[in-house]
Length: 104
Image (cartoon, rainbow, N blue to C red; front, top):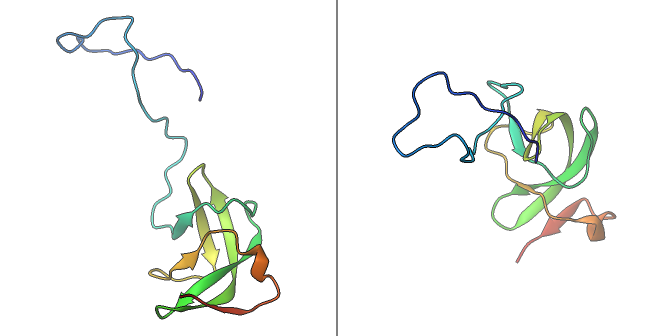
């Protein structure tokens, strides 16, 4: 968490006081028309990682994914996936020697 000072240029809403806390979001950059997934726990910005991409309902294939910019919650997908693709974001390191897995 980061502390910021907030100034309201207009009259305070009814019941609001100067010492009350305010919850908000600080937007540093807005990324429009970007393909993204939830941030996996591994992989750095502008790097390639491998994820298992779902094929059908019960199989997933190892896929190289090029990452772009990262936020706390999401990471931009620059290559390797298309809109609508489903990937496994859980730790799959136990399957590093496999190119395909079957899910039950």
